[in-house]
Structure formats: structure tokens, C-alpha cells
Image (tube, rainbow, N blue to C red):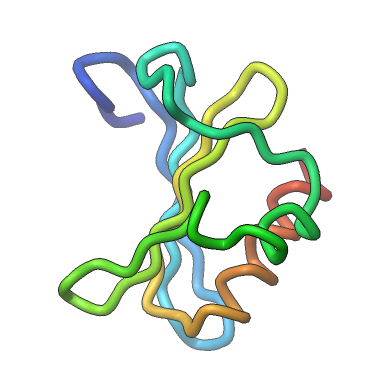
Length: 92
């Protein structure tokens, strides 16, 4: 359990393809601009809508799916990050 914008959120840490990935699950009502994502094809079609690269070289994907918000943070390359997000969407 962690906090996101002053509210409780759940944080998971994974090793994926030998790299660390952080998945945070939160109430998307905290950020009204979080875009909805129902399939990885949406992410591939408009990656800049969901994904940013931090100055430190990490990929951050922010989206909502159903009643939950998700943040994926990793130093995976872009395609591996998209692949990880597809696992999140398929195991929800």
C-alpha cells in the first residue's frame, strides 16, 4: 500500500525481462485527465497519448481501465513497456 495524490493506492514491483517495473493502481477520479485504455492496439496507435519518457530515461504509461487507474513505470524499451501493459490489460 502506498499513497498517490494523498489517497491510498496499491503499488506492485515486478522484474520483467530482467528489468524493474512498478505498477501502481489508483482511483482514476484523482486525475480527471487520465485517458481510458481498453486494448494495447489503442496504445500502439497513439503512444504519446498514454506514454512519456522521463528525463531519467524511464517510460511512464498512465491510463484508466474500467473503474481503476494504472501507472506503469519502467526502464524497459518502448516495445517491452507496451508488452507489459498488454499483460496488465489481459489480467485485470
